[in-house]
Image (tube, rainbow, N blue to C red; front, side, top):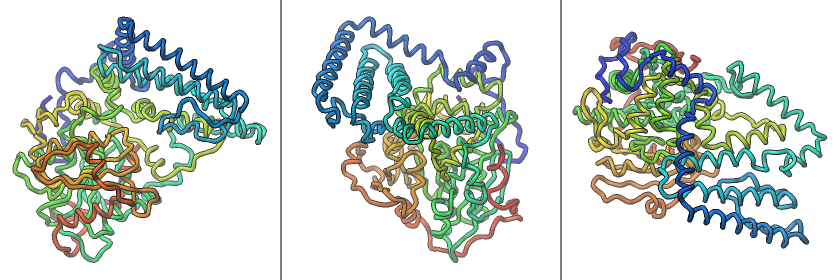
Length: 595
């Protein structure tokens, strides 16, 4: 799909026409029906899931050898469990196991799960889980994408029936219930009622109100110095007597609010970079409404990245900027960098990508929910309202980590009656955004479905952009437990870009691995640089050969930025009214607080 070149950013730029064949705001019966179904399924396509199960079921029916194997596995696991039961009959407190839980599964870690009869239910559940894994994988002829969906959905169904989710079969909950005379269940019922009421009113979770935007979070001093219909650009006030001449320009994902990088005082990356002697600018995206349904990729490119770069260079007088992109903001910045390189625009001194992908062929389990059926389903839903609401994405993202985001929380808050203290990161996560219909359709199709950027088919301004055109040095960060942008997917940049790449692999997930301030306990990272034209090292070998370093990766990042910066100079002014960048208001501005 070709994206049409936009005019320079203005506050009232005209909307562009929708592309034919992919997304159009029709109100036909089909689309209205699909939109109604989507409201029930939280945006998941029943057709996509059904086709996967049919594909798996038909191939399994035609595979007698696989069926025999599964029957043998069932008999073997049943025998193992019975043998284990006999061996522990005379010693109910025996600590032996017939099967160990998966490394990431901590539901049965407590000592109480090793006692009878709870150890029996836990072991039986894990054996069943293992059998279903064998049943849903390795069926010859099944489309790999369908196989992943079936395996994933089977896992979700089993998680619903886990013994940890019931009062009577969870020894920790049972002990608390006996000890408190059921008071925990009363508190849990009250917690559930409160959560239902808050959800109905569109309010954040209990405790999130303690983190007010502009006070406890997003409180780094600064000014909004530019605004158009898509962004507010924040310039942060200097906290050092001299700053590096090249400013930093931060491009967050439009799927999130920017202050993930400006949380509390102690873990704000923006505040920390300002304290390291950098002039920092950050984009704050507008939360779109139905009127923004036609806002597309070219708008985000021109009104977002390029408008911010124009402002940063005009205000500071710098010839180059350090570009930082987080998540999909990093993908957008990479595309902009490739277009700049194609057009001879050398204003990028460096390109830093935090948990950002340029190749989407292995984009993790989120790809389970992205195929033609699913995208068409979402487009029909967005055609009715003009945007995709965050709550309509919640189903997919919560299922990716159902143990942590659904069932463990349910047990803790509704059965144990214990509220989890809300952190600044949790409060930010409960402050979602919407996505314009056209932009969401374009990025799903061009990046996830077709992988156009990595494969040289994506057009910006009517011409193809190529990752290999990027010449600015790159600092790329992946996180070990990322379920949104798996680090091996992020690492694929090494195969695409012909430039120096410093790659960091840090522990933590998609958010917590990036918000990893110095002094944060239990942090470590690996870092290594592959110079231009150096041979490729496959990711697992890179991980084995790169030594682990304790602590936060932020100081290494600041050192890298400093090595690519000029000598410190006096701080620039806040805004430049004569150039059209007057101070409009204090940070964090108005766009970030709009619901």
